[in-house]
Length: 207
Image (cartoon, rainbow, N blue to C red; front, side, top):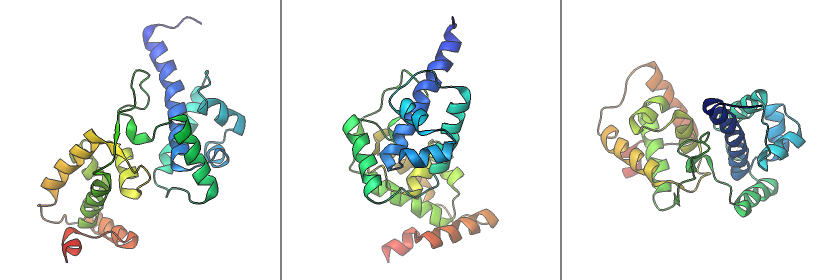
């Protein structure tokens, strides 16, 4: 079937977007059985798409995208199987979500992943969260997508983040950490959730 440029971009976007998301889930340690369960797709489809197979349908793409978004709120899997999936992703050179400026863009290459400041940045996001800033506000002021910020705040599974992301979050932290603690129901709920997770405000870190 002949496709115009717009249709071709959308078609290729579904292919690479679905493939990159499955590989990013592997990178975190999710296995194909779990991904199949979350997506409602069979193992053969997960394997085909992970290996770069073509002809990803709209329903397959949407199922993978929705499952991927769900996993952002989950802790990274632990254990031998998780390590095997992470090793597979590493050996194949597959990239985590944080490596992509636009995970659906066929022309986007994974950025160089930098290590040094990542742990610090994750802690800074958690400090802001513990102060009462919502994930949405932290993401907006960091100019980072809310889904990516969710990955940052909920786990250290990346071990590495793009330098551009590190710089944006650092800049937002410098401003927000000097501001008064937010007030209101949302802020109270955010602080309560942070306490449950054991995340602390800056003053608690200092003392």
